[in-house]
Image (cartoon, rainbow, N blue to C red; front, side, top):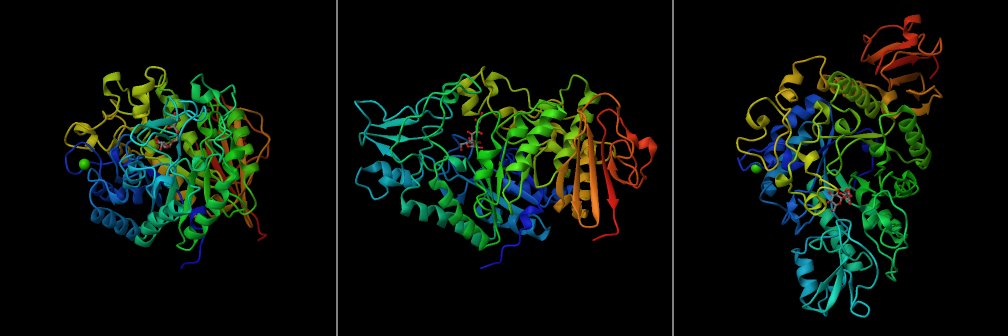
Length: 541
Ligand code: TEU
Ligand code: CA
């Protein structure tokens, strides 16, 4: 039994997609020993927590988000010993490790489901969601996120089962107390081993309406049928909160954390995400993806952030993210390559935003060097979503291409052809080159990470947004005795700020200014795409 310490409010999390980080055994797929080998890099970079997308045993229909055994490591990633070694080595370097926990569904090859589907009378039958159907049809209109009906007919036992994703990912029944206990036990197993917490996959999906009512029609962000329903009955059910309060207690007793993937369709809904923070007694952190849907526009991004912070309950904490393994990378979305130099400036600006905001930042591997979505040809698609919806949706392979370590063949990721092609730009965009270049994106990320680590004010300070004329986002971060001012020019033109804005401030870090420089009249101008962080100290406090 440990006392919870709030370490996660201070953390900077780096998401690793293990298949794509580093291959060590020459099968073209990244593995755990590969991650262990790269820990020194992560330490040098200055992140203190890693989140691994699933590495459990899995038939990989959804690349690990279909778990067939929660306690085993899939052989493609290595062994349990490899995992323990990674955990030890990470902890030795002061790096914490989060696993990805999928609680909404298992693989259809999980022994729980194999038992459940073996007979209607099997004791585990009720661990999943079954229905006879109505007049030879599924019981309601629910649809699977990855296409088609959410109900699959099981001929052997003559009932439908529910799957919110692929039919190979049957949904667990969180209304069953034994199933609940079993899932908690799986988490306890990793906590006992020393894992520091979990990212919780689609946590707002886990409970379904008890009466299985049909969803109402709604106009959605896209025309895919799934988005033309209001998901009133297949997500966000009130019972979820009670489960999360229980989970919070378990995690707190290990001083471990949770970050929930709270999925709401474009353009994201911060209120839905924030609801799962409870009264700071449910999720430790909750993802709101609104920021991932914004265009490169100070007003839009500023508005989105204010809305998000306004939702965070008393005592709880925010987190921020620009990219993950499901969507287009921020560099591709917001910093188009057409104008390479401008793209680079925009990338630096976004990094400054992510790493100076209040709350826990989440970086996606490769973001720090400016990896872009890879050009994936139709024949190269492996993501089931891409296979299903191409060309309407090209799937998630483009944002999952291998890490670009060097200009060696296959970017130093592997000696053989990787499972997804390395992005063609790797000879220019790679860790080895950027590491030696003080003006690179990587060096900029590293400076920001180190600044954040050293600055109490940037880690903990409250945030107050300034009412500036667009196209600038500005905010103050405040702790007793210090105030930091962050100014971000989201435009290609020079912007004049009101006199006095930066006077008496000292530059902590800037794209166009030297650290340590004092405020003055000259500083009332912000250069195109300039990012600058100033510190103001007061005698008080
Ligand atoms: O994702 C939830 C999800 O449905 C979306 O993020 C989805 O990938 C998006 O609609 C694509 O347009 C989580 C995981 O992050 C994802 O990788 C898994 O495939 C999914 O759950 C199922 O476990
Ligand atoms: Ca490998």
